[in-house]
Image (cartoon, rainbow, N blue to C red; front, side, top):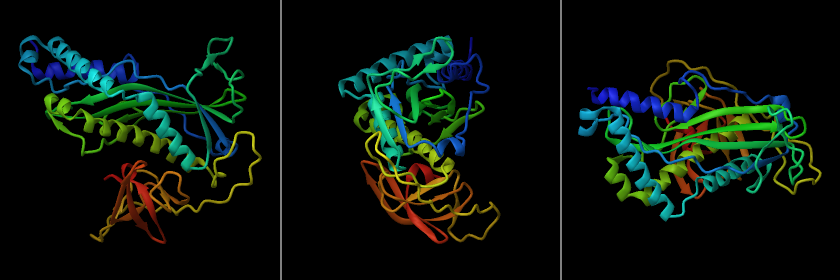
Length: 344
């Protein structure tokens, strides 16, 4: 007879396989953006984002009496029923994971100046060799093609707590539209921290924690905000990756095929090494942050602050359709940044 902890381990193993699609939670592929490749990108086409293969609401702590008596399979059965209930609640509200992701990615990349088009009716086609992609049949002329798909979607109760928090996993790949060369490939995980190598783990918004499954379902409408916040965190990180790799600002969005002016330089703050410092109210950034003139993803870029930069978070904050924003100061630079980027 397995204990609740054994149940948690069994459920975690299943969830890990679901998230990464691997035989073991070890390493996932990763391709960083090459600045020389990004310099030639002005337009991006995002192909159809599929809905996740299923909704998951696992209790990784496995602390139910059923799990104590029957082990991980009983807990998996409970988790399956919970997932069905929560999926039905989302369906009743006509929530679309695909639409949420495509909208968020579009906002993030347009905010960085890219011309991005979402082709909801087009999916990637394999080339004749069966190994690479053939983008010659796309209905839009573009420099790069982006593919995004979910690996996990729902809520999770991590080991050691009865609280449920958002759990969103996704993978993003970018290809040169003409050569088919892979330019970018990353796996993202928001919520329960995944230990697999090369996975980009991002924190879930702490406002969307629910003490048990009943509380989660009673607050379905509010819980959707936690899902969209997690999706926005992934989109913001992808946008940040493009901003870091770029050597300058990108022309404002325009029609595909329209001649574009030369890039203007984007000021970049010099790296500041992490070190012990007096309690001066400054905190180091855990990741690169894009500062903007206004709390909007479409606003002009002030500077791109590197990870490790010590910043001051101003009391001003703004929550709107583009996300939750904070006003921060870093030396001579100040501006608005997405809250998910400056979370401690």
